[in-house]
Length: 153
Image (cartoon, rainbow, N blue to C red; front, side, top):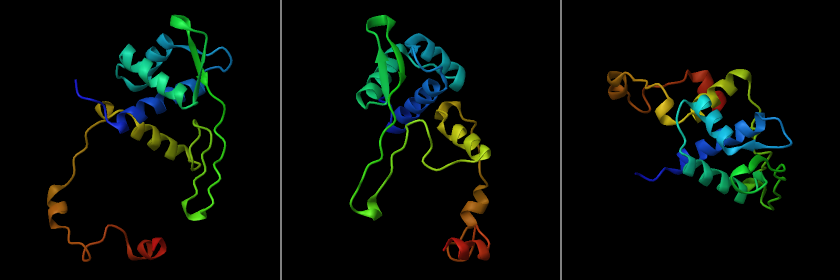
């Protein structure tokens, strides 16, 4: 079986974190319940061993807290991640709670983000106009109108 890409792993972790964020906080959620919720959300099956690996990784990062031990272990979101202070302002990044987006999103943006986070196998394939792509000439043809290009520049 091929090894999953980092993008696949991060996508699976993002879905699990979102499921935990939407669950009632306190007691936590059992692994089996997370697996079932993952299948309902993505339409794809996450094998038990893979689910355990993802949860262990999230626990190791401090993003998820286990409650209990053994098969009856439940999981809940960990404490919010504190902001990181970096001396160089150009390289500074602020880390917020793991379940909140870095940039505030509109409702439409949230829908697009959720569509993009879906596993590749759950996405609907979309084609493109190959003749337009082959006829495109950089510096001659423009995807954006001139006023928008100037504003973005």
